[in-house]
Image (cartoon, rainbow, N blue to C red; front, side):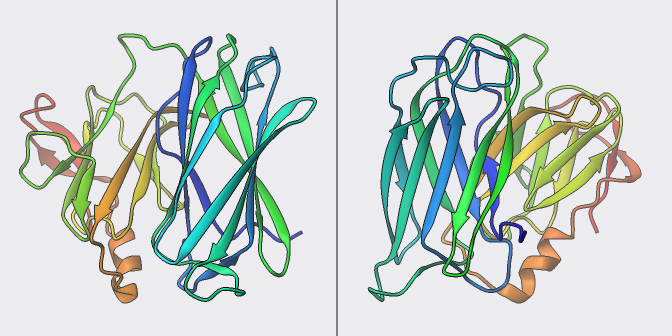
Length: 274
């Protein structure tokens, strides 16, 4: 069975058990060519177990879809026996009668009013995409975890900046940082790739920046769960496709020297990009 062509990433961190929460889902095209789309369908499991997402009897969430130029979307929500489903129909606003095309600008789905069940644990949302050729599906792992003072937070900083940011310009040098030294077995997921992080590191530079809105996930590879997730939005991106792969492969976080980051503590071994 063919695999989905799109990437699906959460735009926020772990969901709080026993609370009403919001989930941002970033849907992006990692390919050089446009992907033709007719429909996206999300399945959010209902139940009282640690592997379920929504509490039994959870009311209908509210769906908001932010689309790139040229695409219009209609969302329809329905309750099944063990899940809420969100079906998003996509249309080409520039060429009616032809499929919508997702290029480099992502589509963002926001689900508000999610009543998360009260059991911490790992769960999944099933993401199915329908193109003119086929329907394929994948599962998006999510974590339900209560906040603690030990929870690390992921931040993004521009070159030489002390204040975190969530918006950048395409290609702007960027540094991903966290507020304590990492234990072993951590990685940074973004743009369909995984970058291993060194034990004790406090930040990871991306001198080539990003070319499109991207979700970054700090991932514990030992426990197979997200520590935190951050979405960084590109403002006025210019899609030079020859530069995209170079920018994404510019970040390697192997030990390359000593560096001092005044905001995040004493000198530590950090990776050098390139």
